[in-house]
Image (cartoon, rainbow, N blue to C red; front, side, top):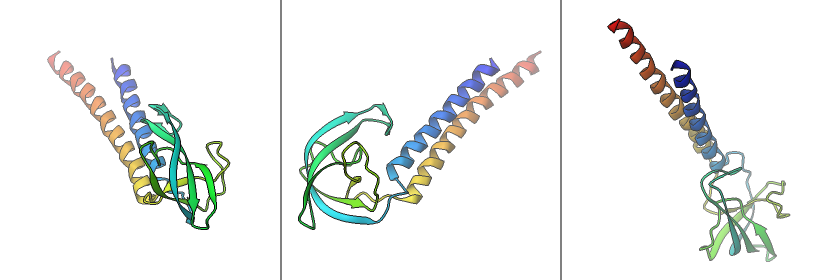
Length: 154
């Protein structure tokens, strides 16, 4: 019985850590300075989830036509969860990242009001791990107290 409780505690701890990592990726504390600004008009979206490489939950991955401040126009693929099919004209930014993701041929695009945060990213990670640890300790504490009561009865 104790090994089953230990296994269950590990599962709870693991779920808490996954939850924390999902929040960490949402707040993307490694993002760079803004390189360009523009206005996006959503052209097409597809849904990803409920479990994907982007984390838990359903995420929209949208292609949009962007008119940049410089006057150039490009079709981009926004980062997951940044745009939705109901968005019409959304201010967006490209950060100083050179990596190309989502098979789009362009650096990542984010909503202009989305500001990555080291504090929120690390807070999410530590919070998820804390929730998992508390849940695991609660399971182990319950099993330990039941074992102690059983010994007292004997």
